[in-house]
View 1 (cartoon, each protein chain N blue to C red):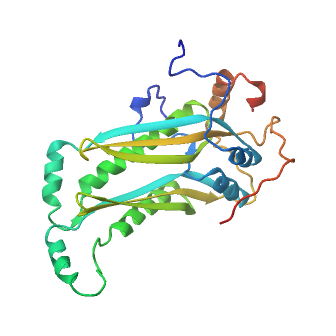
View 2: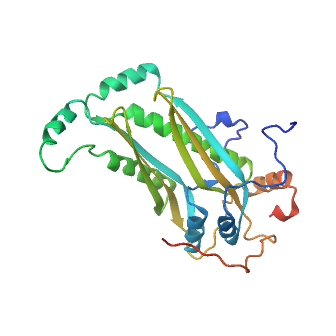
Length: 138
Length: 153
């Protein structure tokens, strides 16, 4: 119960399956940890009214597009920041979820992925010459 | 890259050293096998309204047999174009694993198209190397944060 949310021990975390883990390791990467970014974004009540009025005409709702894009990019950026803090080279398997809250006026975007670091050139490359992997192609 | 310490200081245009990709590990392996490297996840979206007059016309048209030719217009194309623009900004050779998601809002009168994919670049015969500019700094981070010897580079 003394563990805080910024606790970080030796073990890495990842949402890869066993097979996926093998594939990542085979290319010389090791998972560093699960990284996450989120963003709750409100269009604003006034904007909402304006957008509603605009939507009687046919065409793009620029404010709406912009808001949704910003929300997604912000969630992604925060996730990347977390990965950078861990010294990762990349994030793979990103899962983005968007939910509308509060009568479709707020939106929440969550991006979760596994941060990986390239170790391929180093002396600690894990052995990968054994074992086989089957990739379903359908 | 500016030094940031708080995650809430991160802006939407933040671009650090780590790439992002929505590929699964399988896609990742296959992409690396063909000597491509990921540059980042690119998004494009477009929210589009059909308007209030147009549905009335469609209502009449719907009484006849046939196709609705111009319902949501160019929303999909705009979303795709925005995504391609982002990929070009990153200097990508292509985008793989594109997903398009279409959501109908506001009683089906609004549509939002979101397309996302992974921008990739061909690295050719050279194997993948992580970005060089940060390597020294990163080495410090690695040694201080990951005490397990097997994890050290």
